[in-house]
Amino acid sequence: MPQDAHNPDGWTFASLYKHMMMAVEASKDAVTTAMASAQKAVDKAESAQQLRNEAQNEWRAAMKDQQATFADKEQTDRRLAILEQLAAGQTGKERGVSMIGAIIIGFAVVISGVIAALGLIFNVSHH
Image 1 (cartoon, rainbow, N blue to C red):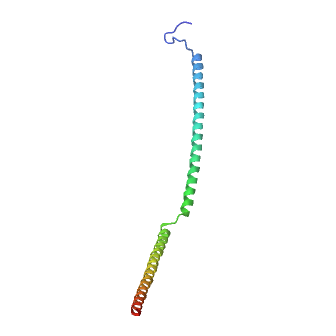
Image 2 (image 1 turned 45 degrees about the vertical axis):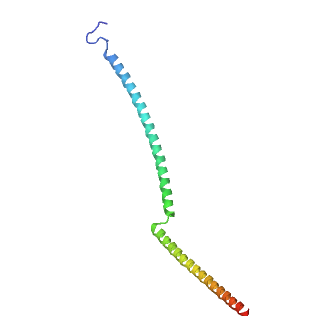
């Protein structure tokens, strides 16, 4: 073959066509592989998102159950007020019991003193 200054490698239309078809096939294979990899990544991401959504739904359900068992502020305030009233009443009763006890002991001391004084008076007068 004679050397052409414009075509030093000797390309013909047939060889150029064959070369381009091989490049297109290689490109198709690369695109197919890339698309398969992308689909795998999408499938994995969807699976992970589904697991995340299930976990969030379980968390929400647990929080809803927990919220249903908690007393609200109004109930808590009402119950605390009742407990405070009961505690205040107990304190008053305890004070009353203590005062009655002190009065009884005071009377006992006074009576003992009177008896002792009478005993001294009668003992002194008999001698």
